[in-house]
Length: 93
Image (tube, rainbow, N blue to C red):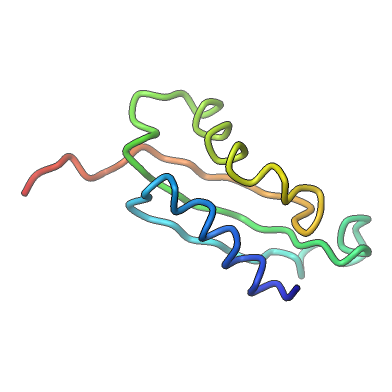
């Protein structure tokens, strides 16, 4: 499975949160030589905002993300850095 396939798998899983924004960054190159990298697993950073995060503390936001991807860790994803923000969309139309 390529890093791009892993990123698309993350994107598909996180779609359940109906994110306003979702950015998935492959940071595997920054971890060359790291134990997880030696097994071929990837390191990703996720920047996500969604209405489901509104009113939740950062730990609760992270739990929502991890609940959707927990079976992917530690392989094929070795590490996941999360930047989870509440929705900036206030419903103004």
